[in-house]
Image 1 (cartoon, one colour):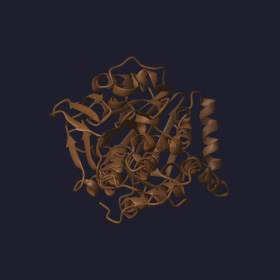
Image 2 (image 1 turned 60 degrees about the vertical axis):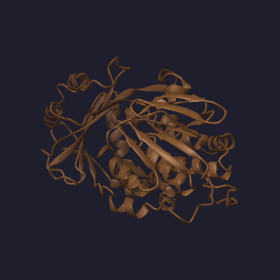
Image 3 (image 1 turned 180 degrees about the vertical axis):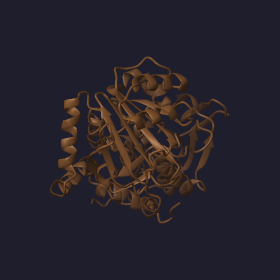
Image 4 (image 1 turned 90 degrees about the vertical axis):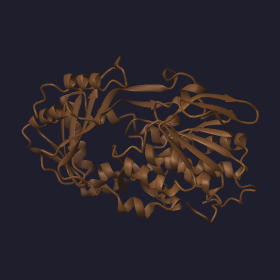
Length: 410
């Protein structure tokens, strides 16, 4: 690893606004606070979002950043400890077992739990504003004037868009989402139902051409199970905020599945209050910064699933803060160095998401059988080690700089 000289200046003179309090935003806040910056995180949700999909970390780069953040032990303590996941036939017959690492990496944790850990580590030195969002941004040579949907206008030195795949910050500065979002031909949904299969840290996966149902239990609540639905589709003309419309789309798309447990899960969808529904898509922008505004995580190089997005966000937050500190707070130099350092890495991680939809929900019966044969081979003892290394390749394809880090840690 490359050792860099201590930055000539701390970031105590910087006042930074971060939009988004999921993972990328608080991760960056942790590093900026350590360098002495004044940090405000604004989040449109009224509080931290609990639960969510499980996210995993893979390989030495992810591990190194988690350790340098000081959260490695806590992530391990709160990991899901998910066990085997089994692909089944319509009659319930087991077709193939997948070992835990196949889906869960080195360590897996719920996104909500990770967000909580980061918030706990930063809340005493970072200002969090929930239930509000950025309305407008107006930049001049000295800073950025920000108006909010609810709060009073404020002025900041820098603004970071860490507000996800459908980033409002990106739209304000870089243009409409249609310029940057690439639909990959699939949709994914998730919600909770009663654990009618009696699963205990295990999962069942059932596929028909172009659609797959996954039911799992992570052991946190024996009476509840998580359902994930993946289906093939052209871009849908729907309201991303209309839950009733989304439920109807899912009910129509998954009607008549031969696996009776899929039918039971879809019945639970009617009363689900925690539905997540989105296209499997990627974000591609020409550059990650414009003036005093920079994009981080899914807002700049995101993928709905399969792109190692959470690990990438934590790595890139480390790099962004480190490069700003190395540049003494000069955003022009710091942002340029950040993009040069992580551009190829982020794109490489993103590439792995391109086949997530077809792999999870193959379009034909023949391709379902082919996928399951691949599952058997990849999960065998002879090949498992090689497969693990292959899945870590993109996540590990970066030589981390050892940025000078202050002794005091939030």
